[in-house]
Image (cartoon, rainbow, N blue to C red; front, top):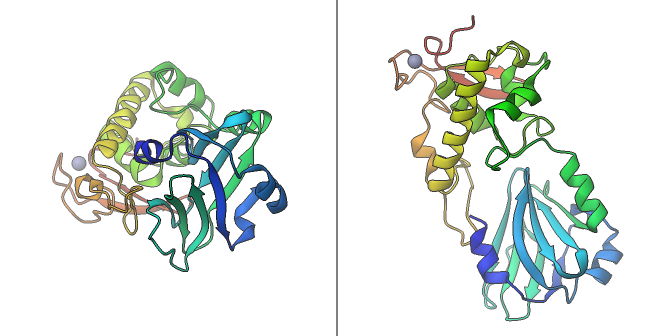
Amino acid sequence: MLTNIFELVYLRKARIEKLDWERMVETPSVADLYALLPGRTMQAVGRRAKWILVTLDAGWTLAVHLRMSGQLLVQGPEATPRSHVHLVLALADGRRIFFDDERKFGRVRLLDAAGLRALDASFGPEPLDPCFTPGVLGQVLAGRRVKIKVALLDQRIIAGLGNIYASEALWLAKIHPLRLASSLTQEEIARLYSAIRQVLAVAIENQGSTLRNYRNSYGESGQNQDHFQVYDRRDAPCANCGTAVMRIVVGQRSTYFCPTCQPEV
Ligand SMILES: [Zn+2]
């Protein structure tokens, strides 16, 4: 989904056109952001965990966390930002990047190389990275006496897997969400590894899923919510066995599973 932004902003100099919610800027100070960002050239857009990383020239990186309701939208010069747009970056060709964030939980950091390394080091492996293998998954779960559903949502253990996909992956791997991470057998870890890769691949193919307000950078909604097997399907028949899907709350997050396919051993 981010390649859309990448194509549009590549090699365009940025300046700050609007910033009316200064608390979104975690680092540096707002004054320093105004001093350092204008004129920077955007070179690439990537991601680490749930941070969107815009690589700028001179070793800087603009990191954006959308949190609950944030959206990054690429707009033409004629677009008027609605009141929920708290940051507007204007590009040299007249396009603007809107950070639309109704609930104001989104955050922005301008990082130097050391800051970027620290951000990177604070997260576990990325499940779609080529270096992520069943062995790596086994290593990060080894000895973790926490529920597997909780472990999968802990970004320090494994990065970039959200609540929906944790439920979906555990269903696909036939693992009960309350099992301790440390109790998984090698075979279960191998199944979970494949399941994580599979649910994320399908999600990307269907362009995202956040139920209420997901939009890609062109403002189009995702389609993936039509493809859930258990998430948000309480009492619906399991696609595998027909048993009614159950909902429980684990670590304060809704968790869906099939009590037949995912027995709590
Ligand atoms: Zn089932």
